[in-house]
Length: 120
Length: 271
Image (cartoon, rainbow over all chains, first blue to last red; front, side, top):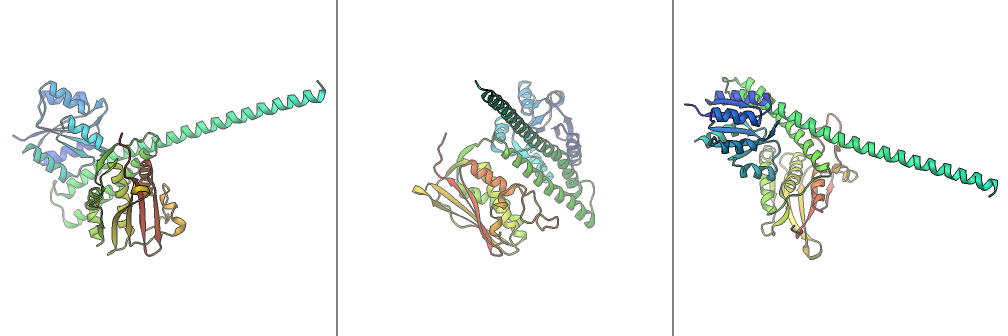
């Protein structure tokens, strides 16, 4: 069975592009645009990997991890995506349990490499 | 009290009132200008952020096409799509530079200091610039610095300043040229670190030594100028160095090259 990736990102422009990329690479894809939606989708259909935008309309993306931890529904790995690469926000993501912090926009070769590595 | 005395008192009071009104007007104008400046900064920040998202999506779509994930492209198609990726990336770099500038120009910039080796940081920045330098056959060398004590500063900001200086040096140096970075200590008790980023590029006229550090300024501002950019790189570098109580300046000769210098306190107080 193909691995399932949950894309948590509020811009449909970005989720459209990632959906094509991941489906063409052989993954199943779910999409959520808010913290609440992400928790709901990941609880109903556990993801193997979450690609998580840090700034979401209804809060900090890292809250998704907190709530999934309480529900015992954490994925195997979470890759955070952030707009600015300062070391403080990076450390905050790692402390919250993200396996990697990627600077937006991520080159697709690098993104696919990271996903493959963390699902291996 | 004489008549003249009364008249002159009344005139004085009138004049005083007029002056007070003028002062109030001036204050109002200052407040208004400040508010407008803050609004402009906020606007720049918002628009830069909002430009980033669709641009990121464009680049990702173009990369998907370029890498043949939706079917193999012929060479012409691939070259064209690669042009979209590269153009998008360049635009994105410029937006990021504007965002960095807007953030650095606001009053609420905080330094996040830590201890690190500046020689290692220079090496990281050299690696980041390697492909551009290799394309132009330019060597980028660090001449010394292995024995320097660690410095205590905001690593991200010093890295950004170094990146802008080294990137510029490569950009404005002709093919086959040389870029170098060297360190020395100066000041009382050698308490200051002096960093030099030098190049064998086209150089800067003395009249322009100050201008190059001004925001949005480029020595050649014509639309046909050979080097495009936001004109913010050195303004950002200056802001970041000055936040550390350092100085930044340039010494140069047209046609021979430029040497950019900045200082950092070596024994900055740890909080």
